Structures are given as C-alpha cells and as structure tokens.
Image 1 (cartoon, rainbow, N blue to C red):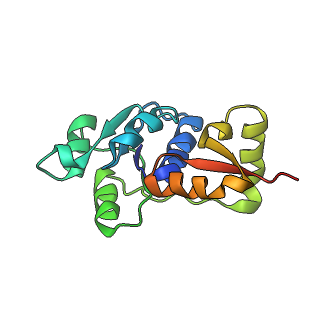
Image 2: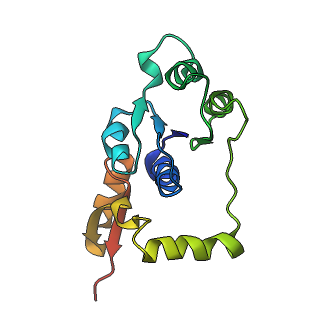
Length: 151
C-alpha cells in the first residue's frame, strides 16, 4: 500500500492499512518531518520524491517489483493522484467507507485496541492557549491538538 501523506490524513490511511493487515506500507511525502511521525502509524518505508530524478511511481515500481496492491492519495494534488494511480497496476486507488455498515466495525476495532486513535493527538492545550494550537498546525509540528475546554 502506498499512502501520499499529508498531516494526519495520510497517517490515517497508513493506520487503516496497518489495521487491515498490510505488511508493507510505503509513505510518500516531501516533508521529512512526516517520515518520523508516519512510522508510528505503520509506515514501513518512506519515499521523498525530491530525492529522485524520475517519477515517484517508477521508484515505487522498482521497490516493489512492479507496483503496489493498493494506493491511497491524500493530498488532492492532481499530479499526486496520477502517480498514485500509476503506482498500482490494478488501479486500486480509492477506498470507500460506507458509514452505516463500516463505522460499527471501526468502533469495534478501537474498543478492542486494534485501532490506536490516541497516537493522532500529539499536543494538548487549554482553551486559553488555543492560538498555540493554531501555531503548531501552521508550522506542521503536530497531527492533532486537543483543546481542553476548562470551566
């Protein structure tokens, strides 16, 4: 599985792949910060397209011996979508969640400690410091910041 990582969206895709039993999860991102963070979510290998002088889908095809079984694009960038599609010879790029049927299973995985949502929260601040939460977000230094509403 290949995940184009953007903050917690890509990490969420990687966590979903991990929980689903993927043995190899390749994260792709331009930001080196994401490389360290994404390992906690099951990413086994990391590719920064800036490190190569050829399209990232060619790098992934070489790494995997032909391509991946699933590819998830999390940026919304058309070029990233194309490379994600071309990384998967079968064209399995999008996964669809059906809320009525799938959410109970997701909740069950969380309750059984298979799905680790706590690791998405990288910072906590009281409401009086909400601007710190925005600063962390704008600097790309965290995944999710929990803002505590205190009385």
